[in-house]
Image (cartoon, rainbow, N blue to C red; front, side, top):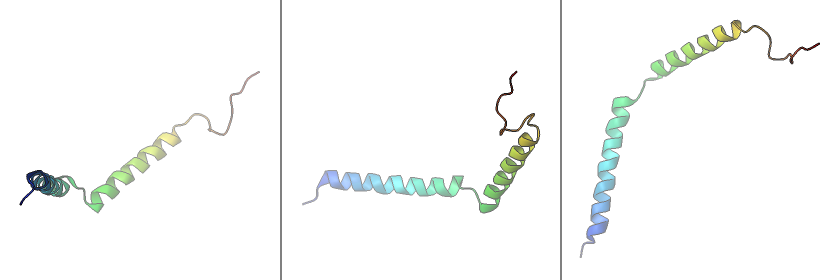
Length: 63
């Protein structure tokens, strides 16, 4: 005797896993792409820090 609910759920899980594998292949980024994005983010952060008017160490200066 076959439990139809169990069969249906197993089939749905298999289809979902197959779709997930296809999406991983289609949307994945290569190591080179990830490194290029990280270098660009680092460059932007460095550039932004260079434009800072005062250092973060100093508190508010008052009279």
